[in-house]
Amino acid sequence: MELSRRAGPAVGLPAMETGIPTQNVESILNRTTPSISIYQTSVNLLDKLACIDGFETYLASLLEDSPRDTKNGAPYLNPIQLLWDTFRQGTSLCVIYNALQPLEPLSTTLDETQNILKQRKDRVYRFVKACKENHIVRDEDLFTISELFKDDTNSFVRVLKTIEIVVDTIQSRGLLDVTRLVEKPSARFAEAQLGPPQDHRERVVKEFIETERRYVHDLELLQGYMDELQKKNIIPNESVRYIFANLNSMVDFQRRFLIGVEANVSQPPEDQHFGAVFVNMKEGFMVYEPYCANYTRASKLCIAEEESLK
Figure 1: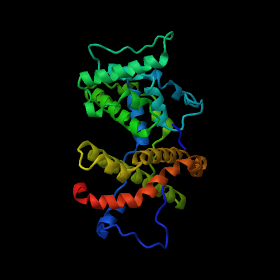
Figure 2: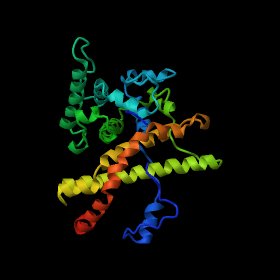
Figure 3: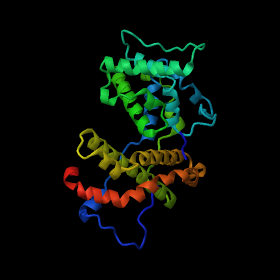
Figure 4: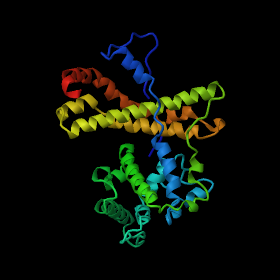
């Protein structure tokens, strides 16, 4: 996953007529920031996974000074890619499932003489199948093999949800051995939570990250709304495509941008390089081109479908 915005309202331009009452607009702008992000979810999950017998093998690299990204050998800069790589090994998922102490444990080994990728996907399949057949996770909350191996945060959010459910089940059954947690893996990826700002720079950083978290949260709400429209056939699928255009791509990009911001916030001020996040992801901002090009048409279609969309 390559971690490489949207423009705010231009100063001096007249306000756009939206048809939304002013008090509603103010309510939207002043709502509280979501308390959790994919970055924070991953950090919290790491500590729970470290309490599972056998999972320490997959976190061993964190004991090194510079845990390495398996794709390019560079240090892991965030917990998302670490978990993504770990879950793709397949056997790690079997270790998690076996923590439930099932009657039929899943195999956690691979035959080095056979096709490794094929075996890894087989272990993923067995994990998903076991969770489904033993009613650990509901069908709608289960990820697919293709979703795990996609380079798309929309898919990985589903993966995280499934794993969280399984781990929470392990914990609720009293099978999560917290005594194993000698050193928190999350210490390598300090939570991106700011205390009270001490100076102007910290106030700017705090507002920056809270704004990004709120924006991603809003996009995810809109994405969920789009999914419901499609599932329930409230309006024609063609209309959904025109109204929401490349929303999924926008959500994916903004999550990656937020991950980059949060990875910087977790560092000491002297090691923070927010400008590098913008520079490294500059091409990704082109995801807003089709959105802007489609804006007028989508707005007119929303007005035409107003009764159905309420």
